[in-house]
Length: 115
Image (cartoon, rainbow, N blue to C red):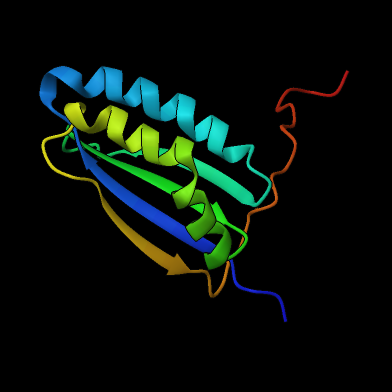
């Protein structure tokens, strides 16, 4: 049986004057992380009620792959580089995927009369 995918949820609290810079850096680095061989996807989420609160969601093929990602020099260097943008240290939790579902998108259809 294959290992379950692992998801990291990293909560960040930005200094008000640094939010835009932090968000820009998160978008760039999450795109880089998404290209790692065992990465299944990344997302940067913004709290609609608290501008300072950001979440980074990273999904890897296994807990081992996620642990290896966290130990990469580039990952550790990134965390050190953004520390001055934060009001507190990042808070990270790891989750195992038990069930996952995706909605199949339907192509957009014209609502007008057929020609």
